[in-house]
Image 1 (cartoon, protein in one colour):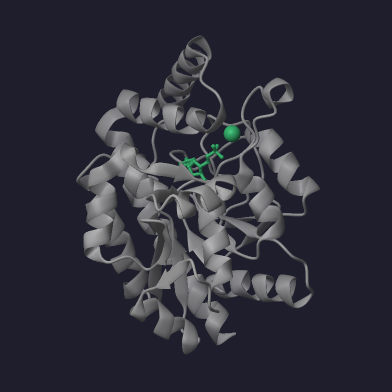
Image 2 (cartoon, rainbow, N blue to C red):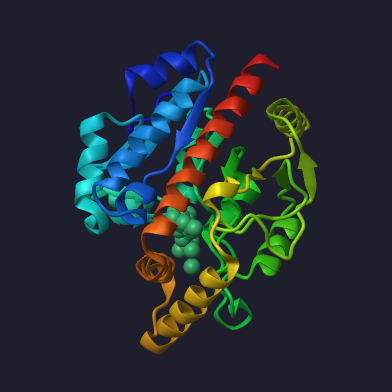
Amino acid sequence: MSNPYRDISPEVASAIESNQPVVALESIIIAHGMPYPRNVETALRVEDAVREQGAVPATIAIIEGRLKLGLSREQIGYLGKEGRRVTKVSRRDMPFVVTAKQDGATTVAATMIVAAMAGIRVFATGGIGGVHRGAAETLDISADLQELAQTDVAVICAGAKSILDLGLTLEYLETHGVPVVGYQTEILPAFYCRESEFSVNYRLDSPEQIAAAMKAKWAMDLRGGMVIANPVPETYAMPRVEIDAAIEKVLSEADQQGISGKAITPFLLARISELTGGESLESNIQLVLNNARLAAQIAVAYCRG
Ligand code: PSU
Ligand code: MN
């Protein structure tokens, strides 16, 4: 359990020690995903949603070079205020941000790594990274997918945004043996929209069934994660045409401006939220809360089972 680069908050440490349910949460959503102060308010509401379901939230970030599991309200406020000044940190970046004693907002991949180091098996986020459109030429495939291939954490998300090639993302996950489970749905959700043209691999209807599948996977030594796709609540879903139009526009902007590498996902996400405004922000907040509740229920069932 000990790791010289890591600080676990007292609340998270005691939950892990006594085998209480814990849900990992990421920090890109705080620093890059939403405007201040809604980002801070949302991060705190997400933590409350986890607690209301009987689990302990462990928000993960890097602060002054320390891997943090469990942030104080002040630390969440700090990341929210710093916003885009905080470095986006994926697997590749971790050693450098730690040794330079910088702050880092953790992607899905980096959050999975830090969670798994502490034995946390359940992680709630908004959307995962994936295979980008045009990847046949650019080879732009998020490190999140490789992390899902090797790190034993279930990621509860609302699918992925269709800035990505969702079909290729599913193919890539299939190649790496990563199951995509639909919670109460057969259809892969696409973040703001409850539906895409793709199917999930398995539909499961209860947190208990999901927890049992996780147990079975890891008991058989089948390394790697699991994607649990949880559609945005009906009331907060966005019209597909509106989202698709915004996505087409921002993809061509990114192309014209020659944006690539780690900058492209943040660029696309920021432009989409600018174009779709307050409605998409509300949708984003609600789907994250919804994922946090389901993740906590899964963590509770996993601890009981
Ligand atoms: N997709 C979203 N919201 C996000 C991200 C992706 O709908 O916030 C963020 C996550 O932190 C994810 C990261 O891990 O972007 C993936 O970045 P990249 O494509 O550079 O791997
Ligand atoms: Mn990339």
